[in-house]
Length: 448
Image (cartoon, rainbow, N blue to C red):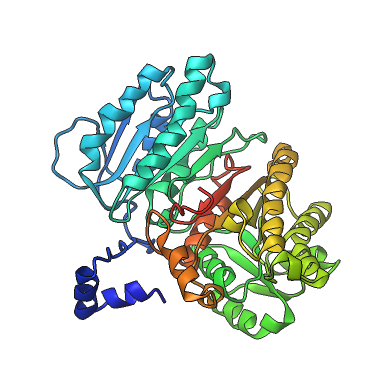
């Protein structure tokens, strides 16, 4: 439990924090079934023709949002500021960002959202256009650090052909589901396998999907199981024998199926495929959540500690994914989601094995997304920052508090924050979301 959040729960604690000059972290709005998408109306505008804005606004309105045109007079607090920067073609054009945002930011509600749309800078054209589009991520990351009250800012880079595949991503970043995702850049790529665009379902975006989750019995894995089931998925939970009892209880609660297996076992992939088919007839996605730590400084680390972490965190996801493909369990429309870590991006003292394994996971995303894209299978990863779990409770107090506070949102995340992000990646509408590693860290300063 966050000690500052505990103090905030009573009047005496709030008074004490105010007297010692400790700014309380904002209360984050998280998703609740039936709640509106936004906390207030949206304002939408574009620098230019707005080719990206039109489908984005259509997706928001289909999800129940009220979208106001830029310039409409209103004193209402805003739930979302949406801006299409995709037509900015030279450095001078970047002034559109300065002209559009300042007045609206003063009206942004607590837990409000800023979503910016842009184009891939690599294919923007001449040097002026490349520079302009490459400038947009820097603007968004800096803006995210200026927002207050639990508001967030994120960027969606839309490749050619992905314009009509914006719905799940725009709605995710606009919604309370993205409470702890801040300052991120996500790329959308045109799906290589033609197919219909699934109809949005605000409260059941995973309806009918069959999803397997490794490391499912506790912590982030258990939060994933509950969130996916809440959103309509049929879930197959996998964990080792030591977690068999809580796994059985959890899967009974959500009406799912379970597999007691070690992910490092040679037959793990085949067993997951067989269990998914036996229970639900197929498999639509796999979430490689299982992971372990064996922390020591490298000079004191045993080979056994090194080997165990690499085997569970990196080799098992690689091999299970390949086995599922060989079994024909993952086909067009399939989803592979891996779990990396901020440690894999920035490194961490005493975790050379863990950091190597989680950086390797990013390599799997890069390799698998390129290889499986032509088959219509998407591959992405989440990289959690400081998340309030049993594992982080064991971290020494000073390090734990630094991990909590060193982010734009000034607090740790919850397991459900990771689960919501993975759920967006699993959504049938997220067929353009592939090759991404999305940090769930409240825009943590570590590794930024």
